[in-house]
Length: 424
Ligand SMILES: Cc1cc2nc3c(=O)[nH]c(=O)nc-3n(C[C@H](O)[C@H](O)[C@H](O)COP(=O)(O)OP(=O)(O)OC[C@H]3O[C@@H](n4cnc5c(N)ncnc54)[C@H](O)[C@@H]3O)c2cc1C
Image 1 (cartoon, protein in one colour):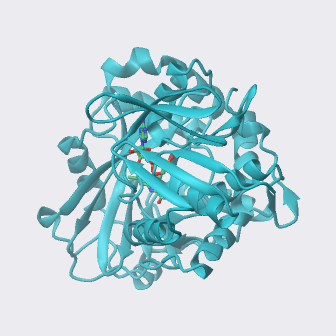
Image 2: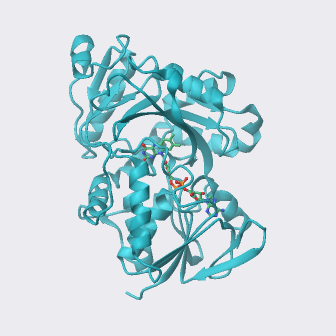
Image 3: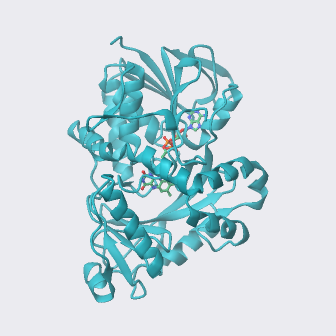
C-alpha cells in the first residue's frame, strides 16, 4: 500500500484515534485543531466503553422526554425554545428514527461494531496507550419497576442476538445495597452488566497524544490554534489562525473529524451531509466518604457515577441550546439533584472540575463514516453521539481501512458502512 499524507481536522477522540491508526499503518498525519489536542468532548466524559449500549438514542421512550425537555427545566434533557426553529429538521429525523423498525435497524447497524470495541482498545493498550483508571464492573440501577424490567429485558435480547453478554439477575433492596453500599436507600433495583469497561479519559487522551508525538515529526505533526473553515480543492482544507489569515493545508487524503463542529465546515464547503448537532453534557468531581465499588449508571435519574483513579466523577444531562461551549450552572444543579438521590456520603457542595462538552449528535444516532460522494479523497468520521469513546478506537481502524481501500472486519464479518453514509 502506498503511504499517504493524511490531513486530520479535529484533535478530539475520533481525530486522535484515527491519527493513531493511520500512523500504525505507516501513513504520515498532519492534525489541524482549532484549540488544543484533546479539546471538545474528549476528556470530561464518563470514560465508558460499552459494547452493549452502543445504540441510537431515539426510541419511543425518548419522545416523551423531548416534550418535557422543551417545557420544563428540571429534566435531564433540555431544549432551548430559541433553538427550536434550527432544530426542526433534526427533530423530525429523530422522531422518524424513534419508530420501532428504524430503531431496530439503527441498533443492528451499530451492533456491528460491538464485538470490535474492546479488542480495538486492547490493541492500543498493547501498544503502550494507558487505559487505566476504571476497569470492569458496571451496575445499572433504577427504582421504577417497569423501566427496570424493560431495560433488563433489552440487554437479555441483545445477548440473544449475540450483541453482548447477558445481564446479571435483578437485585432488589438488601441484596442490591449489599452489592453497592454507597447507594441511597431510595434506590430499589439494579443489575450488573458484564462486558462493559471504563477508563480515565484524561489519562487515555494524554497518553494517546504522547504516543503520537513520540512517533516523530516524519509521522505526526499537530497544528493547534488553527481552525478549519472549509474543504479546499483535492485533499486540502482552508484554515484560519487567531489573526484571521487563511492558510491551505494539503495532503493526499483529508479526514474531517471535528465532532459537534463538523456540519458548519461541510456546509461552507457546499457538501451535503446528515447534520451533526451539539448535545451538551456535564461532569464534575465530588469528594465522597467511600468510593462506590463499581461504576453506577442510574437509568431513571439519568446520571452516572464513575470511580476514576480514586476520584468520583458524576456525569449526565443532554442540553440543546446551540452554544456548545457554554457551561450552564443550572444544568449542574439538575445533575446534582439526580445524583444526590443515587449516592450517600458525597459532599455535593465541594464539587470541582465542573465541565461541559458537546456530544456530536445525529438524528438517527448513527455516525458519519465514509467518503464524500464524488470526492473519494475527502473522508468524514463524526457524529458519534454518546459513544465516541466506545467507538473511537474501532473508528480509527475503520478510517485506516478506508484509506487503505480494504473492508473493516470484526470477528470475521465485514462491516457494512452504508448506514453511516455521509449524505443520507
Ligand atoms: C458528558 C459527556 C459524557 C460522555 N460520556 C461518554 C462515554 O462514557 N463513552 C463514550 O463512548 N462517549 C461518551 N461521550 C461522547 C464522546 O465524548 C463523544 O462522542 C466524542 O468526544 C466525540 O469525539 P469527536 O472527536 O467526534 O469530538 P470531540 O472529542 O468533541 O473533538 C472534536 C475536536 O474538533 C475540534 N474542532 C472543532 N472545530 C474545529 C475546526 N473548525 N477546525 C479544527 N478543529 C476543530 C475541537 O476543538 C475538538 O478538539 C460523552 C460526552 C459527554 C459530553
